[in-house]
Image 1 (cartoon, rainbow, N blue to C red):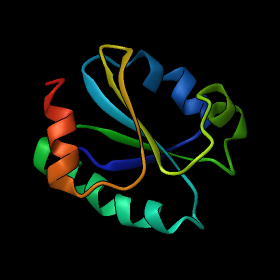
Image 2: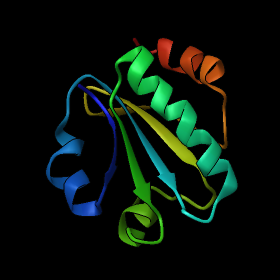
Image 3: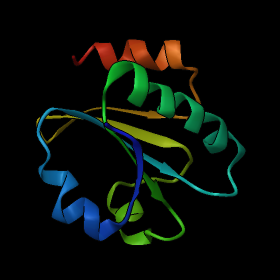
Image 4: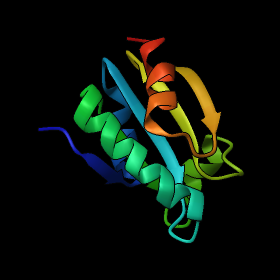
Length: 105
């Protein structure tokens, strides 16, 4: 069963970056209230849409955060077959985020 997964820079580079299919990568911070709200949306994405979601803590993974040019949280990326197909900023409720995902399904 899929689940929302916290990952490190090493895990992203070693496994996730090579993943095929659709997945979501989200940069967040533990101290960020919109990030906490967005976590519920992401949990629904995993359970209702069967799409893997990977979260990266910006404070613990500064190299990857800089590599993606993240300056605000949450920042999210949708990838399909190893290519970034969309980028967005901020909290979204599940129905709105689901519409963004469905553009790439």
